[in-house]
Length: 129
Image 1 (tube, rainbow, N blue to C red):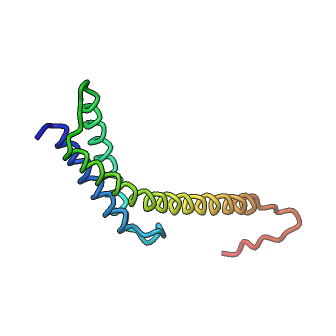
Image 2 (tube, rainbow, N blue to C red):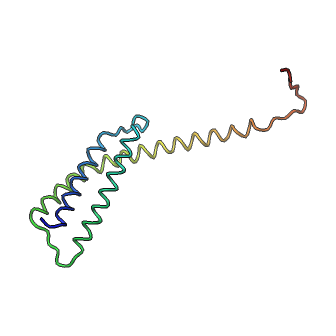
Image 3 (cartoon, one colour):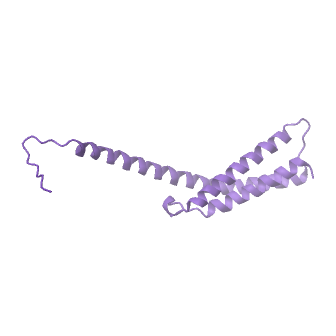
């Protein structure tokens, strides 16, 4: 088996791993364990590196895909079609959570300034201990 075929098989395996991991992540980000999200990120990075290595192999002149390679590529296309909606859903959930966090921060900033300066003009301050 050629080196590029090992990388192609590795890309397929990592894509399957990404898909399976993405299925375990809830759309409500609060319900997810941080380790699941970290694992998904790690799998994406490993997959990206494998794709880059595969790309380096196929950039050589005269590269031809074998019939077996085309079968693996078809599997990748099918898996990618299933993976894309999952990743889109996760991205939207994460974006919505970030928007809510930013809105909460903005709302809390409005109240911080109101309580920092205390005016003592005409008011009675009780200094009992």
